[in-house]
Amino acid sequence: MDRVALLQVTSAWLVDFGFAWLVGSWFGRRWLQAANVPAASYQEAMRQLDLAAAGLVIASSAAAFWAATAVMGGFQLSEAGPMLWTMLATTSLGHAGAVGLAAIALLLLSRLIHRPGRNADGAVLLLLAVFTVTRASMGHAGEQGFVSLPLAAESIHLFAIALWVGMVMVSGWFVLDRGEVDRSKISAYLDAMSNAAMVAVTAIVATGLYSAWHRVGTAEHLVGTDYGITLLVKVILVVLAIALGGYNKLFGLPAAANSAEGQRTVRFVLRLEAVAVLGALAAAAFLVSQQPPSAM
Image 1 (cartoon, rainbow, N blue to C red):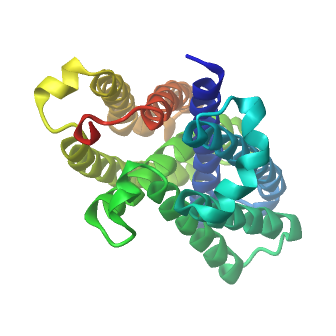
Image 2: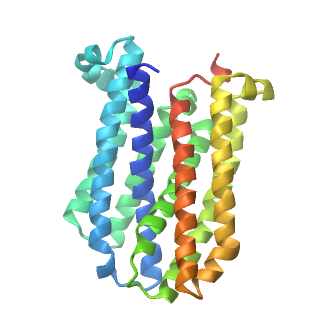
């Protein structure tokens, strides 16, 4: 893998990672509020993490544009810098990326201002939705325009993945690390998270099957091309994560409601699930740098 491809893959993964945290954080706040967890115990720490995640998305998006400019022009990275503004200003890819960047910049500004409330929360959710659609349009799904079934499926797929990845990261590495929160409130939070995970996984599987059929076409392409093999790796990691989530749903959550040990087990399984889905995101980032068989 050359430097351009490495930057393309790495920046795509970091964008997905930061965006997933922002989505998981948004929903995590709702579930913590619904469970009557005192806002003072998490609000400021979560805001700081959101600022870091938004900054990561902006910086990684800029790196992704740099790599995209090099790919489109056939340049080395050192030669692509002067052409970056031209790409942003004159191509549909650049226009979509600029809109997505503006959405995350506004989200970062809203977290800096820090005025919690229903209107502010609604605005942040809208910005996350705008970023999702623009990001989906920058990939293979956007080739048929903004009003198309592939783009709608990809947008739902990206947001559902971000929700799933984000919720397991926020829960496993933030919420369940806050030992001062009452166990009954944590159980209410985990129930809400688990229900949302079921919805997210259903959406991921449905849209993923559609996108795989649309881009791969045949079983021969699935096992006979680099794109298909990478897609299979992604599917295996997703299935592993679903299995871990299923364990928590059936066994972990009931145990967490009854003991601190059960809660620690749920946290451990959530962290394993997070590693699996982050691996799936890495596979998805590799797919960005490859042409699907249907386009060949």
